[in-house]
Amino acid sequence: MKHYEIHKAASFEELKKLPSLEIDYKYPGSPDGITAHAQIGYSDTAILVHLFVEESVTRAEEFGPFGTPCEDSCMEFFFCPMTPDNRYFNIECNSNGSVYLGMGTGLHNLMRMIPDNLDNHPIQPKINKYEGGWEIFYEVSYQFIRQFFPEFEVSVGKEIRANCYKCSDLTEPPHYFSWSPILGDPFTYHRPECFGTMIFAD
Image 1 (tube, one colour):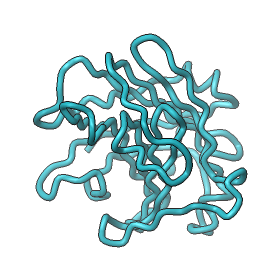
Image 2: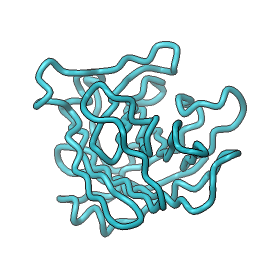
Image 3: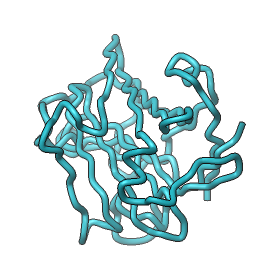
Image 4: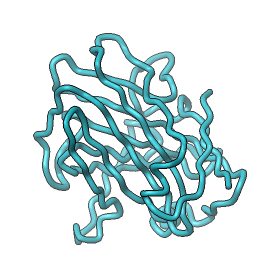
């Protein structure tokens, strides 16, 4: 099982200075030439997420809150805030800022969350596109997490289970990469038993 330390960062600029993890476990049929990375940190109020990718072709067809970003070039962060609870949040974003936010224990009971007021969506991504790739930044507030996990607290040494993914269902050919390997069947990103461990550090 893979491990990663989540360090404290007061801003996204500080987050960019932290060690990154490589989303480099490649699944059959995925092409060469795609490299994806993540930096996960934390502040006094939120988990900070930076996902970035180098790819020669970026599919970006989905827009708005009702899209299916995993059909496009997509970066994803899944995490279980509390152990041994297997409920996890799945956050999927494309380079247009289309977001899928869900929660469940697997595909069989996954629930998509869309607030009545989209200005108050819990995930407000910031996107930068550049030649040869793109990056996304967002926060996951502790206040939001505690709506579902009231006992969630952050302290040095606390562990969460998580995985980071790069995918696209509708590029030609499709591609699938993860940080922590998905072993066994069925092949789906919605396998919390295959998540790695992330540990809050100083």
